[in-house]
Image (cartoon, rainbow, N blue to C red; front, top):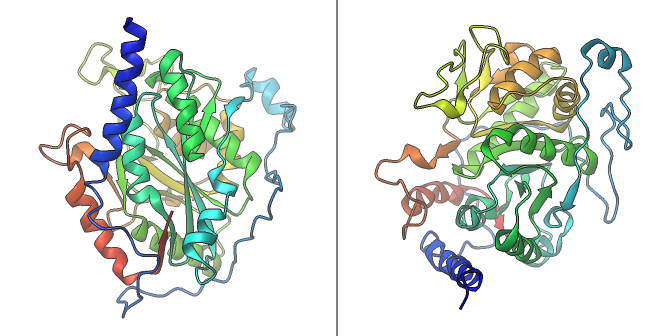
Length: 375
């Protein structure tokens, strides 16, 4: 058996083991519906209803400022900066978002939603186990009370057996967005932008968008409550845009890391890249959420702005300021929504049996007071 055949066998075995290991996370299958009991959580009256997507229809976000050919309407800005980032291309696009068979078969007509959110999760090509873990935990939540959720994994180019396994994974789950760009850590901003571009070109403009990493556990129930509250505030206080919600952490006046060989060298930013001593107020990576109308504006600014490898600061801080959104519109909920895997002591490996099992069971227990459906 040559080395390539041995590699193929090992990778297939790893995928098979993944399925068995992650089954430990879910002790019991989720029921179609959780009975709604007396809730202590506040109920919000939502006046703005989300539009439904008809089958086989392609949407273009109305506020996107670029055409399909990549022409920019803001020519003056392009001439001023002399920088224009080319548009991204894809060699595989997700199908899960627009495939309602799961919802019809498992959820039925009793489940209704007032808004929709798509989570774009940045994942390395070889992180098969992490993606499977998310699909079997919070990524399986399709409906939670008023919200409808879908999850897409954004991955760059890969080669050889890894690419072959990715294609098979995409065929099986239909939730991969593979773009023609590098898959390394320093190119993380491009991975985020690739997801943003696809979202504004293919989703209705009133959808909600989340960007996250594949090493986070998200409390979708609390996320749904925060979105409901934000929608009410936009209506009641006549906000011009939905805020950026930092569901993990917010940083304020953080300093760029200037030590090129230090322990945190992957976050190194030279003075040539960013000359100021402090970053603007930003979300600290992991997971953040806003409406797609804001995403379209951030994406347009990104096409004229050289990127930083610290994509969270670049997008929710620098690009946000360029689009004119004030610091007050970068908010952090009081409740914890996103949990980083490495935030748990003695849980340093996501391949151990029972990894994050107790944490997910605790989160899932909160869903008993909500109407949910899993796919």
